[in-house]
Length: 355
Ligand SMILES: Nc1ncnc2c1ncn2[C@@H]1O[C@H](COP(=O)(O)OP(=O)(O)OP(=O)(O)O)[C@@H](O)[C@H]1O
Ligand SMILES: [Mg+2]
Image 1 (cartoon, helix red, strand yellow):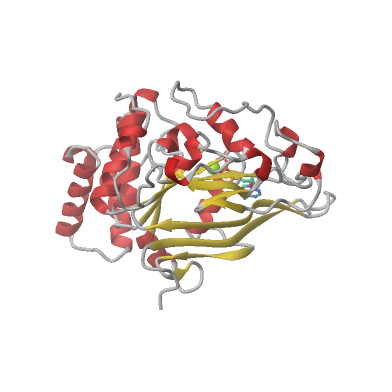
Image 2: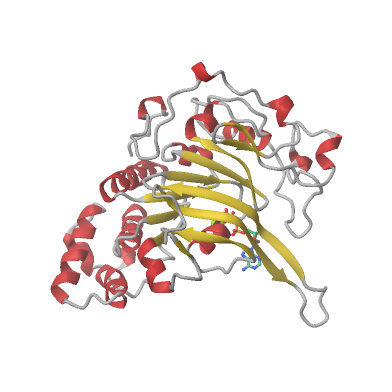
C-alpha cells in the first residue's frame, strides 16, 4: 500500500544524519557531526524543489540519503510509496531516483566510451538485447542534444557542457522518476549554463520528471524551482513557493542569499552576510544562524533551536523574531501560485542569458 498521497513522489520525514568523527587511538573522543538535523521535505510529481545553502550545510548528505546511499541516523525517506532502505533495494531505487553531479569530468570514467557508460546500467538492470541497448542509447543521446557518433568517443573528447549532457544521459537512461541535480551547472562556463538549465527544464516536461535542484546559489535555482527550501547547518530555515521566497522572504539568511545574487533583478533587499558557516561539531546555541545574523538579539542565543513555523499557507520560517521581521502579504496581493505540474510563470523571471 502506498504511504504517500498520489501527487507526492518523495517524502523526507524528520531525517537526521550524524557522522561519527574522531575516536581513534590517542585522539579526542568520538563525537558526532550533525550534517543533517531533522529535515522534513516533500516533492510533488512534476515539481522542481530548489535546495539552497552554503557549502557544508548538508545538501549532498541529504541527497545521498534520498538515493539510499547514506543510512539515516533517524527519520525516513519514502520514494514513490516505498521506504528507502527498507522495502526498496538498490536496483529498485536506481529505477526511481538518479543523480546528476556537479563535475561531469570527474564523475565520468575516462577510460570508457559514452556507449559503455550508458550501456552498463541497462545491462545491470537486465536489458541484454544489443538492439534494444543501441536504440535506447541512440534515443537518449538525441534527447540530451548529442549526435549518435558521440557514443564511440571518450569523455576527454567533449567540452564541459557536452560532458554534462552525457552525465544527464547517464542519469536518465534507466527512466527514473526523480532526479537530484547536485550543482549541475556550477562547474560550467557561464555561457553554457543557460543551455544546460534549458535542457533540464525541457527534459522535465517531456519525460515527466521531478527534480531536486541543489545549489549554493539562489540565482541558479530561481530559474528552475517551483518551491525552494533554504538550508543552514543541517536544518531547513525557510521553505515556500518560488514566488514567496523571492518576493517576500522572511528569514534573514534567505534575504542575505538573495542579496548575494549578482543580478539587477533582485526583488527583495537584505544585508549580505560575511564569515563562514560555523563548525557543525560545535554549533551555536539557540538559533544556529545567530552569530552571523544582522537581526540578532539576545533571545536568539537562548536554547532551544527555534521551530519551523508556518507563517502563511505553505510558507515556513525558522526564526525567533519571525513575528517582528516578517509580514505576510494580503491575500489579494499574493501572486497566483503555479501548481506543481503547471507551467512556470516565466514571464516573471529574470531572463536567462542564452549562451
Ligand atoms: N563522510 C563524512 N564524514 C564526516 N563528515 C562528513 C562526511 N560527509 C560530509 N561531512 C560533513 O557534513 C557536513 C555537510 O556536508 P555536505 O557535503 O552534505 O554539505 P554540502 O551542503 O553538500 O556542501 P557543498 O556545497 O560544499 O557541496 C559538512 O560539515 C561536511 O564536512
Ligand atoms: Mg555538496
